[in-house]
Image (cartoon, rainbow, N blue to C red):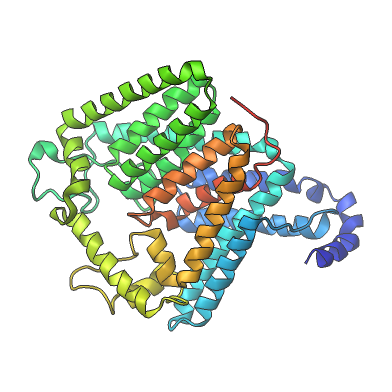
Length: 420
């Protein structure tokens, strides 16, 4: 592959040396990455994808024209490549080939965006702070919107909460921000993904921003995001504890215990929040939980019948096949579990490859845990993957593109400056 690139680069070198456009191509790629970040808050999925696609095209042009550009695969990249190859094979064998093609193009866009990011960040590590700042700005804007929606008691657009067993004061106003389609679970997952960007800012801005945005997650009423937030705080706390001087560790433990006690007090004191949190443990006593259990049962049956290569990727393809397995009255657009969804759509080997990618990515990044960028990315990916156990908003572009940004930061973690 690299030998082919070198041949093209030698051909286009005279053009590259004289072209103002090609000399500024990194700047154009960076702008498009920023546009992907900013448009995620309000634009449609297709509109966001156009900027990602344009960044990918510019990267392809850069690879073909700039001398010295080449492909290099880490252990994590090899797992990702294997995952993508299996996805392609699963589509080729899908009974709904044309429906699966759309899913393949989406997967190609996301993986291509990741490739774009790693090639861009290779020579532009100093631009990471701007991407994370952009995410923090988006989080700040969405936090303001969330508080406004909460104070105005914005109404539900669809049935977002089982109120059949709740008193009026236990019904929660669930905010959904500006993300499209409007959905508190999508909003909660998105805020969960971008929340860690605040830890890369100064304490004066980062701490208030983190606290307020975490509060916005609480206002979504998204229980999966609650669980994800808990694990984000747990991982962040563990990293901070490890990096502290021994003399400060006892104080940190005491302060952390006090914060946990305060958070527990808040949950118990606010009836609507208490009902929402306790419904997590209601199992089939909550209609949303019961619905998910029924979907899981049907999806496991789908997996058993298609465990090698799956049914093919794509939500339209999933819905068509799911109709053959679903329990009456429990139609679903997804498996409500990203790991089960990957296994159902592309088979067990695709799931193993995806998990291998995540494990190798984090394993290598932990060698440079002193970088605040690495800490931010690890915390973000932790929240995304934990939330993915009970929901599949992970596959929405707003969260997908954020995930791949964080993955690219981890992938290029060597060479980052050590920061406190």
